[in-house]
Image 1 (cartoon, rainbow, N blue to C red):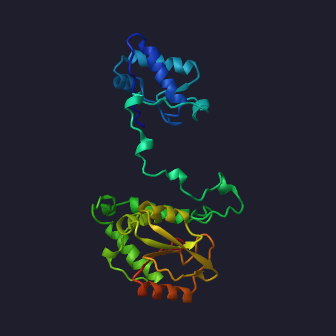
Image 2 (cartoon, one colour):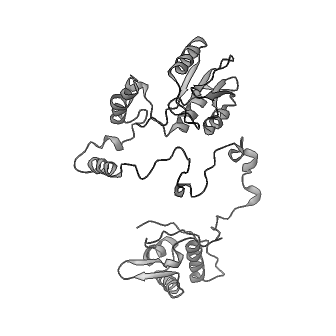
Length: 303
């Protein structure tokens, strides 16, 4: 059973039943309770609100009679199917606050993410025959059976529980070893264990690079067009973004050297162009000559 924390600021001028009933109805209408999950029992709710069990029992009985709840013998009270989804336009009751003393978040914000340019995906894109959406798996081709089998093997029997332990200042050694010996060699990459860092995705990795290596004096060369969220991340450090055109061989370098080059050579975003061997060699030579660093986002390697 899910534990729900309900709070009522009881008004001594009003009846207890009335106030408990009002709180439960507001919670029901706002979607606070999950469908097909029992609500707190009369005893639990009475203990939480510090009222008598008789009070909560009468409230639950009235909500059943009014069609908000249904009672299942030896199981508990559940939402009526009509209230399985939050009511349209229902306002979630927020905690009372002194508006004058509330923080002025608008004045504290150093930037407004909603004003950044980004790629918007249409609602219901997954139902399109040809959605032209990148960064999402094809659920029809995802190896669910293999994934489920691996998960069952890991969780079943006597397995090494080390993967559930917080390793504090390092990643899970077993995962690092799998990446080092099975994934990277397929890309022609040789790396030591202490040269591999697991992140929460490409944007998390780009954010770490931005915070550690970039400033307002940093010039970042990017493909044009490119992954827009990468630019938004670099702009957190107020870096100077230098666009480079893309042709059928990949990025076209110009004579203005940059400190970093962010590229997607395997499958360029969003054109899909694969960077040619000649253009890759040119980029490597250019970076070595100008002491620049190449940030390769190999997001679509298929590994």
